[in-house]
Length: 193
Image 1 (cartoon, rainbow, N blue to C red):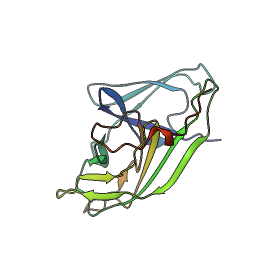
Image 2: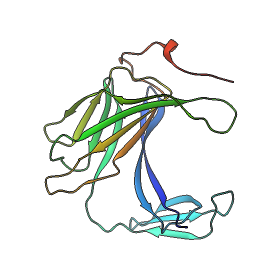
Image 3: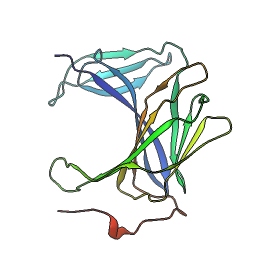
Image 4: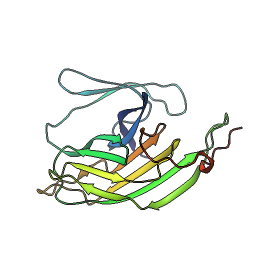
């Protein structure tokens, strides 16, 4: 059985003095194997991946990933604004991409795991692409803290048909920027045990 491993990039965003941010798929391959635990870049921009044999997902050894020096279209920054999300791309987009927005939260308790709670699908948002076509604003008037927002980006490509690397952005909102319209805390589906 082949196990495909997904490496995730984390893009930090400090809001009201609190660190939060977005997770975006970076590399999906079976060649890395399981047990990936420690990551470091060397002076040649090679990513070294150390493994641990401890736990249910363990393995041993060290692997490396070398950048082929090609330029890629990717989301290089995600920030939460007073109006929603701001996504910055590494290259200009050819046109407005298609976007799907979802949100959910979890039960917060001492037990391991939780199903998705209050899963909102197909959320309506207003999109605006900058004149240089490298910044996309996703305006959504009902952000809630303690929710994870999933932004699926489809048909994003450059003028020379280069497609987006990492087309799903997951942003966990812990703090909402000051000046943002806030939904009442009474609407938050938290169940502490």
